[in-house]
Image (cartoon, rainbow, N blue to C red; front, top):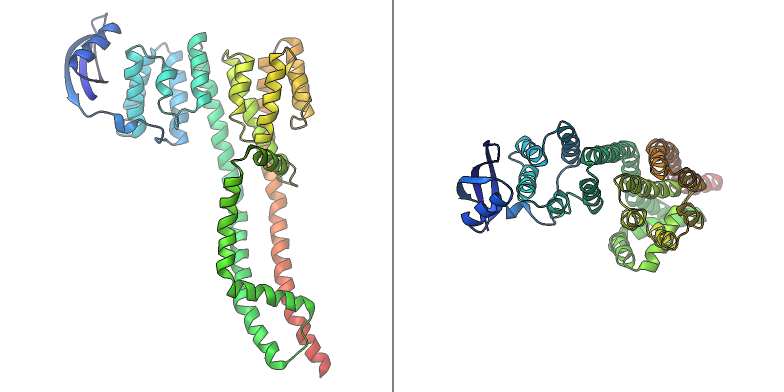
Length: 399
């Protein structure tokens, strides 16, 4: 296929320009005519196949801008092809601009927007295309794009908060690792030589520190192999459903970080289910989609059983309450929404709750993590210092 740059006119007699991928000019003319547009002339160019495929990605802020602009343009009464065309011009000379141009071409020729977006899965995820499809069916496209922009802005803010909170701990960890390696590979070996020359009786603590130092110096290939190999083995083991379930469940039971890990998974579930349900997607289909989005196999398994229960006619809140991974607050709010007939509002309220509580919890977790790291560093330095002082004290007593 080739890309044809065309000039045509619509039913109102207005001249329109654009690009379309087709086998030949006749195919271009036929596709445009089916869309109510009549071709004036067309020139063959370069195909846009290089912007297709599952590997193409764009930055999150570009995606947010796309959702915001689409919501505003559609609310202003601008048609979908014209809105996509304007955004393609705004993003011209970028890969995303070429993607938007491709979306416009397909929409002009009668392809639904969600189907065109589905050709770029790394840019438009499965839940995004599902929500857009629901918006096309319900005719609520401006509201759908507005909800998508709000969700991705929340994700962007959350990622920014986590990165900012990680700066100091990562610096402390890096400095701690450097100091520990220096102590065990330079300071302790010299001290060991001194003890050997003096022929002193070595205390147990000093022996342990000397053994660790000797292991790091002479067994560093094994240490590197363990550091590199454990993540690789873990990645392979996580392919097993049973191990993945046990591992994710164990992560949720970790002290300090466990509750935050669970909140992240539940926030993805409630956010996406709220958007899907509000967009008009049936509850069963929404649960099925959300199952693949939570990023936690323990919750995924629970959602499989929840979906089966809802399919059999059991209320959603009752199905959720049967699983410990769903907190009672979430179950109560959903139960209230089901009873009052405002499940969409209840789901949105839960989403708003997580919007507020997760950033606060992140700050609390890292507020605890920072002093723990400092205490650990001080303890390591203190143990090494004590292992050095104890033999010196023996030497002093001998005198």
